Amino acid sequence: MAWGIDSDSSQPAKVAIIGGGLVGLEGMLALDAIDYPKADVHLFSPKARFVPKPPAVSSGFGRGDLFNFDLPKLTATAGATFHNLSVSEVITQDRVTRLPDDTA
Image 1 (cartoon, rainbow, N blue to C red):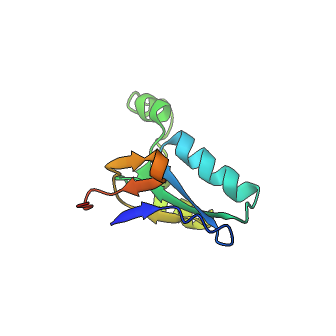
Image 2: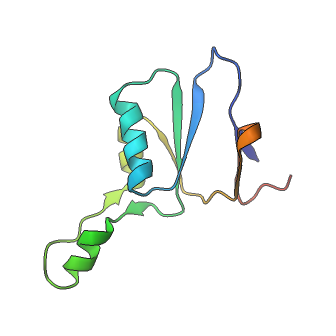
């Protein structure tokens, strides 16, 4: 199944955020913070938890607690949809995101 953007301007634009890292989460939270009405935000990540790297390294040496974020919960809080999937290809000229099970 290909996942793309419908060009009908009366519908919210589907925004695909690929990756549940810091930059992806910042983008998702920024769209939520400005309450962008024409965005239907979808976050794609093969991992369901986000663990910031610097605290993860220092916690191994007893310097601070390791904290992490539940991506499905954080995504729902931001009014977005979480997909626990990798993305296999992005075709920018067609505005299509292909998932691993896409055959076409």
